[in-house]
Image (cartoon, rainbow, N blue to C red):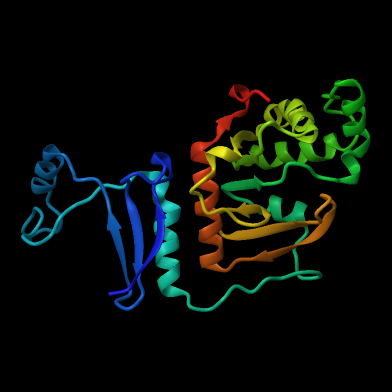
Length: 264
């Protein structure tokens, strides 16, 4: 039996925690989990599953427990078995408009940022002022903020949960200091934001590119040059690729520090 390792519970740093594998030969998912407490086994024994059938755990079988945070890892394991084709990446002109993509979200929209500096033109003037003076402009009506914050409020107003996770090196760069200073605008609009020091990301298998994941089904990745300038993006809804990205984001989110608790 050749098992392919899929993922491990991210909350314990890989130390003997629940783990998931895919057995491609037998087309089965293999799960290691915590042993159930005796009271849980008694509850299972007392529960009628199907009318007319015996209850309880049959001889030769067992029960394990997994935390809910491992759902993306289990999904990834099943996607590995059921989808043998590679992802199709759509680039220009096949990438959906970002605002339209976010407006299509029904439940969740998550954003993973992995760089320590960006060279986005719209931010250049404000960032340079911050570098000169140490003052960050946090006026929601300034510059490009009204457009973005309006889109965020519109999205969250439909009941969509928006989460943003940033992996950063420490000591942080001037760009991250500025980004941290203006993040209260994101938070005030309804986004949840967390920060993960790169030193605490060891052991996680992270994507090479920043990404947006919509409803756990549609994936948009961003490309940047070495200097941090915009270099385009690509889109896919390939189940395995999406599941891998979802698992990576959840692992980062589980370890990351909420914005109001993270000091730069």
